[in-house]
Amino acid sequence: MESRKILTAVVVWRRFLVLALFSLILSLCAEDQVSPGEYAPKSGQPGKDVVWVANPSTMVEKLLDMATVTPQDYVIDLGSGDGRNVIAAAKRGARAHGIEYDRDLVELSKRNAAKERVSDKATFEKGDIFESDFSKATVIVLFLTPEMNIRLQPKLLDLKAGTRIVANTFAIGAWNADQTSIDATNCERWCTARLWIVPGKVTGTWKLAEGELKLKQVYQTFTGMLKGANGSAPVAGRMRGEEIFFSSKDTQFTGRVAGDAIEGVARTAGSDRKFRATRIGN
Ligand SMILES: C[S@@+](CC[C@H](N)C(=O)[O-])C[C@H]1O[C@@H](n2cnc3c(N)ncnc32)[C@H](O)[C@@H]1O
Image (cartoon, rainbow, N blue to C red; front, top):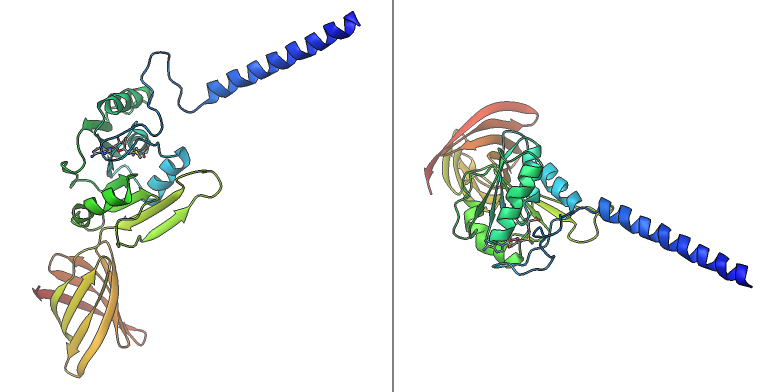
């Protein structure tokens, strides 16, 4: 009887040891290791216009992949939290900047960037995204709310044509994303990545060899009318940054918009010719 009690105690004690060891390994593997006494943000903690929730690590990489971030880019994260998107972009060789209202998160981001040895490329400022200038960005990262995205929309649409905007989950008002992708395998919550490419602006009246082209643009798509010697024909097309694609009757136009000029190729029945259009009115 006594030996059975001892055996049970040994088994219980061994189970406890295994569990303790397992918990220790798990805690060592945890993503957000913090030293005792160091500031650690809590998911859902209040922020100025939205709480802090960290972008899941797979989504950090997915958003940067979608934006095709390269060392030539200048990435700005609006509401940069603990700096993870900015630091990941800097690790890809890009210059990256975070604008964050919470001072503790800004200081934490700077420490995290230093730990990852990217402080030269990853910078942070304490600021309100609605009062900040982010016009120099070539890539914008958003993980905010639908309302905040709508408030930002005019400034986002005004960025240089070709600027990529990536967001976790939420849309930017009625501006349809150019690409959407859901990570259903490695991500539990907040797993939808969206990409928008700021379109060049083409609304107006354009003169070209074929006649006069009147266009009305809504975000990255447009419709209009091409008036030539043989009458008028409707036009429909879309922008991808500075690139323009449209068709009218049996002709497809492909080109690039630079200010008040469009240059490209027009294809009719398999035969190509160059075209140039100049904006003559708004
Ligand atoms: C959902 S978190 C996203 C954090 C980070 N971008 C990420 O992907 O992990 C939103 C962040 O925006 C910050 N924030 C809220 N309102 C802000 C404002 N008006 N200006 C700057 N930052 C703001 C919050 O403090 C929070 O860190």
